[in-house]
Length: 241
Ligand SMILES: [Fe+2]
Image (tube, rainbow, N blue to C red; front, side, top):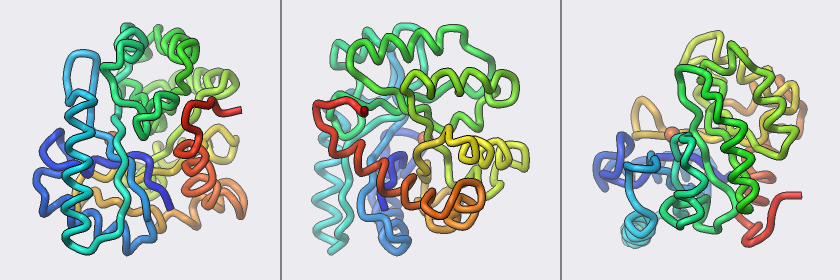
């Protein structure tokens, strides 16, 4: 499996605090059947690690993983806060995209409030050749108050990433139901861990296999943890059709 959203890089955000935790997270991921993790530290237009810093941190972690005999592939990425000026910052090369390929961006909508610029922002990103992947939108207020926004964004080519922890009910029953409903309506494309550590928020996907299959169909889990993420990572320079 591929985990497209995980805070495994040490010391860059509220995820892994140190190398020992990152290595523990890597072991948990491998035990779960995850072979590739996209490291997605929190970033915004004016805060968070720059692309060069993320590249260096990924290289350093890859070396440490090899030293410890852990055959996990870690790729650069970022979880980027939505902002009306984001497209310009991305165009200027100041924001890390998924796998540093410049064609997919993990975009975090705000938890609170309904930003009136969100659809315009997604459109602006698409204009510069970037497909937004909405990070855990089931947890955002929009999901409860204006779910039709997500339908429109998906119709216009955006992708949706659901947290495995949402489907496990870790943010409550309402968010669990919204996550399942997005899968049922075929509006969700990716399941990721959003792992932050090796204890309370570990990088684990397999535990929601049954929930995903129940909400979708028998192929849904493989599609959302392997097929679609694999397509994203192997689409260098191209756009998703
Ligand atoms: Fe995250």
